[in-house]
Length: 219
Image (cartoon, rainbow, N blue to C red; front, side):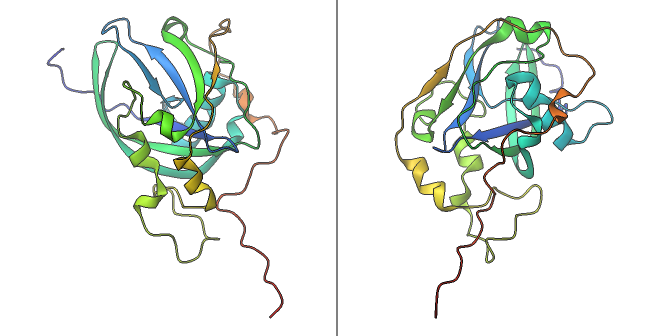
């Protein structure tokens, strides 16, 4: 590897979660190192763009999923990796996006580089993710698992941006093995443009995060 100073280019990632608490990962092939690995969707923050806007844009471009699904809830994750011969060391916000179903993944605006290195996508349960030999970041589950911190005193109050993702009743499901659904590589769309097509209205509402408190019963 090169001895050049590591890059700290700002970037974001998105943790997409379906009703079965599976997480969407994309698979990439690095032609320089020959490595094949899994990673959440995401990418670099452009000039004059906020990290949240970047997360919404990148989600649509890389998966075709609606960018407005990305919530303003994130956790900082330390990254140290190599890609295409370049060393990256930085901290990236990982944003949350919950979906009411398990949507199909179809990249909407890949760059030529992404077209050449993309290898597919899968909705994976955490137990399956824990067995992956090539995962970026390697500590993905530990970094985003809310059980690593105490439950908030008021579960109706979302955490501040940059805090860990809040716990909810679905956390225990992450310990259960579920069937892996793989979305195979599809034909590549045209390269991305300067438009923001993800800003369209979502056809479905999203499950609230954190969940609404249960209604009080009779005394």
